[in-house]
Image (cartoon, rainbow, N blue to C red; front, side, top):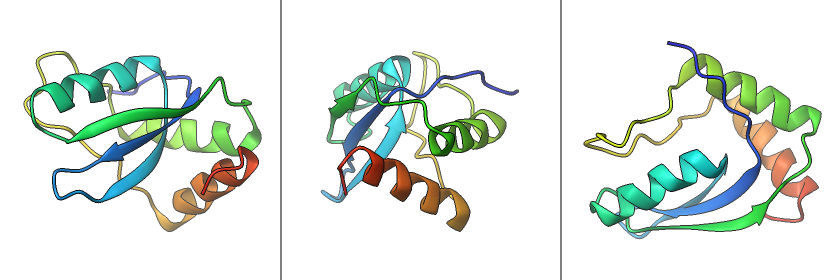
Length: 102
């Protein structure tokens, strides 16, 4: 099932092993990550930047996320990390640079 999410923020997610990564997300997904932290699926999530510009790079990544992933429900039993292709990793790095992160 295709999602229709608009990505609007950058968050830092801390995995259970203590490693961290940055994700381009939105308020709903951030809420799901907060719930995942409460349930012990991840250690922590924190918002680094909110209301990021909806640049071409964000649109490209947003299209990828919407085509390949669905928003988890509150009944989730695990936290699904959005795996990136090398092309999408490059888009994320450009988004981070546009927003003076990473």
